[in-house]
Length: 306
Length: 327
Image 1 (cartoon, each protein chain N blue to C red):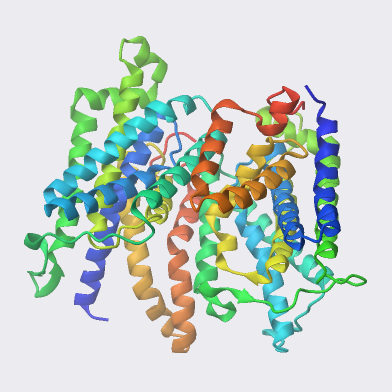
Image 2 (tube, rainbow over the protein chains, first blue to last red):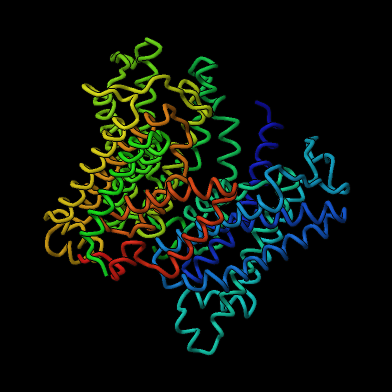
């Protein structure tokens, strides 16, 4: 167990966490402002990835692919909000869960219909491929490093947006008291569509960025969606700061647990059994973390309301 | 508008009549479909105790379904390989006897429900939905990575388990067992809802603060409901595993938890027969639409969306003209 391996795994965990943050930020904004549980957020992630893979295949440009991912996911998000989600704001959580579960079925099977069941591939752009040497002589993939940097930049931008701009003030006001800002003359339904499209665009961006290191296929959104839910529940639903901290916690726990738990168990068990117990426990680690946080603080780390 | 009790009687008679008619016309596959519907209905009747009466939206009920399934899988696996299950000080022989398996499934899932309920009922609303989902995922990933019982590939059981006095290999006899279990669970739900406990639980869903002021503990009411609910769903899991003679981690998947909720909502939340109608329609849709197009989930999604948006109260709500049960 060398220091280099440890640093590499920490970077992997950070990269995973930062991508989870892109998903979780949209989810937590949508819940915070509209009070809506959106299970279909993973479908927007998938739409972003498919749009990127398709455009990259047609044009060969990764930049165009990213723009396509952002646009496709934002448009899909805005459409879904206008047609379906809008009717669910006053509904019970049960109805929201079901309607957005229905949207998952429609989006997943629709994508399978159009693109088929075989995965698509999205290549890392040449300028970002290959390793880079970090101080201390550690070799690390440039693309993953760019993801960490890009994700942190988006997080900073999102913080600037909510803390410094008029739109951000309206979003925060919407979280506190919807009726009041509607009474003050803000077009609340336009604000809702905008927030939903923004969240969708972030999910689409994450899908496209991650799509380049994994395969792009139907159903890729659901595992990420569930982890993003774990993230926002740990952070406290509605809090962007909580989502950021939660995302890094989950990303690091998941990545480091998979590597180090089997090693840890080898200290006092025979290797075969240790690997099995360790990897079984590692795959459950983030959920154990979440339950522990919720038992300790039933509304998450930075959550204000249930 | 039709009275709910007439709908209830018609549904139950219909579910029993279809397989009998299939015996008459010699179509064993229809019996299998009806058995599948009865078992899914049983699982959803279990969930309906927590969801319908107690208002607990559990997105992790697949845990109990899966535990029931693995209780059957593990016991039957040890019986068919003639290797006793070694639990340190305790050695258990495997078994192919359904009553023993059912009892194990019910106890295991009730214990799991007690533990999960104790931990997660402290939270409410979205947090409860999410923590139950997280427990579901925990069991799912555990089952995938636990290689002793097949891991991701699951476990195959070669011969269906036996029930004293019956030949369970005959489809209609196995259907009869599942149907009987369903009827028992329905009677349980019906009696429970009318009992003082059910009334208190109903009140705890509507206004926990008032329930507390009259000296009842809403948390305890919900916990008992959650445990009973989990036990019934666990029994359904054991039957489902016996129907397929196969268990795999997909029995723990969150999609299954979602589908159980779907069954209830299609039929009508909190309605006695809601889950039965939902399961029957689900299996019928799955069979017919699945035969027409590979992409039948799109249409399932569309139907579901229409029900949520325009037909609150599900099928029973539409037929009786009342969106919710009278409680």
